[in-house]
Length: 354
Image (cartoon, rainbow, N blue to C red; front, side, top):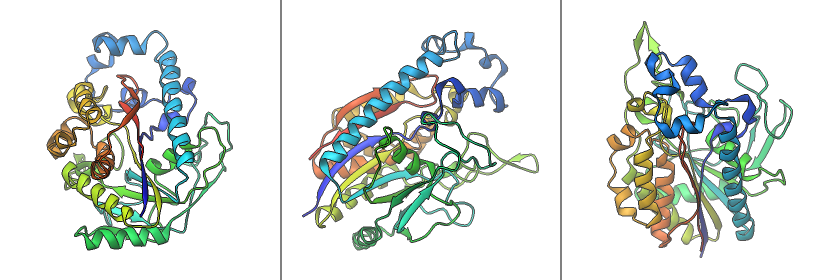
């Protein structure tokens, strides 16, 4: 019989870059999103908690505090993984127009590669991405894959009625999409190495905007007109069902598996009702209280429309994890819940221990 550890994390990209670079999504939104009303670009018109967090230094002091909490949480998750000694680390993460583009967008896809290689400091335009570890632009990270377990999981899910896609090699992304690669970088924040085989499980979280926004915050145009909405991603209920089925497959397997759901929650740049400037704090608080109480039924009842209204598209990765943990009869140990107005998204770190 298999053993399972559950963990919830984030893959917040600015955790890679030095805080003093102010590479925050808010900074980019203020400069480049022409849909933000001019009056809302003035901090005096922001909610009071946001003005306080932004402060007189454009969020620099708050960024350091934000980082400290996230890194502490990642260290606790890594310690739990090391103590558990998994055979496989499965990560539910979203693909933002990275490996999957116009030619195919699968709702779910198991990446059963032999190995993965990523160069997180080499930007798409060839420029260098400064990083807190002061590692060079050409630095590559290589991770072992779990192809045998990937085939077993795919077979088990298909036999349970989940017609999940799978892949043995990359499509468009040279290495790993950032949801997976960032998670691995942060789980190894102290750079002691990460030798566990990795099984990425891709979820089409962005649904109606995955092609429309090409994985970003700005809607793309054709002949001066916004691209049409895409079909939706899988529903919260379906994500929880496939998470539960994944747990059942691994319970009946010989593997020790760490199941990781990686995402921030509501994203400012996905929340038009807040002028794309701050996340849906109230909705995230509600989801957090439900999670803390182990109220998985409330998560299951959330609709796709509610997810999109709150900018919580990436929460679908956590929905997969929640379904698995409900199947295992687990409630979370909350390591931290990091609420923010300035740093794009609220974030939770949690463990679901055997």
